[in-house]
Length: 192
Length: 123
Image (cartoon, rainbow over all chains, first blue to last red; front, top):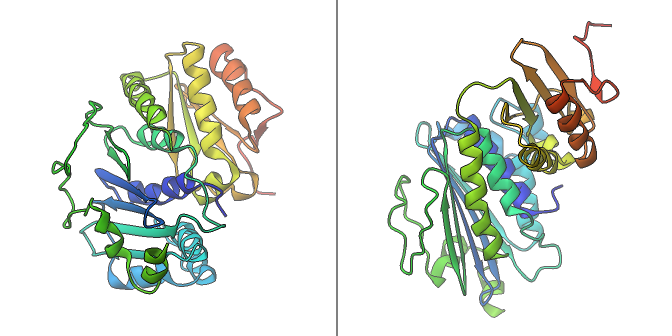
């Protein structure tokens, strides 16, 4: 079990590297008002077919047996953390079309781990493969931060950053972000 | 979450990228699979990067890899020399990582008591 969310991020992003991704987008949305924290990792690696995806998402014990090069306990651990915090976990992927991992957690949940040393995570990823563009988008109620290892120039964007477009789907940077992760526990999130 | 800290990250990442140019005498490979991360590989790596920078060692590059099959003795790093010699260090922490940088990467002396499996032969 990881004690920091940034360790989860590193772990999931390592899968992206193993999948030959050229761009890894890490989006962290901290929405204190709605009591949600959403992690989203999107890559353009080789993705997974439906079969592999099912196996990856199977419960903890079976993932280990069906382990392949780019499959491990990482996703299962993140799912466990998310579900433990009344959150949601979702992976979307198609063979040859990258993968998107989304996990949302209830910020105020007693088990919600701290974000932790995000810098160390990003540095490790940057060092892992210089050719890969590691992007970090951090958004909260008050502030935004965008980082890309390919062009380290800071982008202080007031509106939505449109330059990140490698994925098939646009990230919704607005407060309505929590919609993406609705399902069961939306009620809990909105009540807060 | 500290925005200031994140901003510092940028310069640091840039320096890391600059350090990667050219071939190096030493290549440090950190095992950064799930078990490695859980055991503290990220902290080991961060310490090494900091220490290498502090000592101004330019002939070293640090990379990461997935699981290396040494899950029970993580965190694990491998130091590869230009000569092809490889040394694996296991059960590391920040202090030990510093020692490896100071001894092996700076002075070229292996840290024998931290190294494991000298070209392991099946028992």
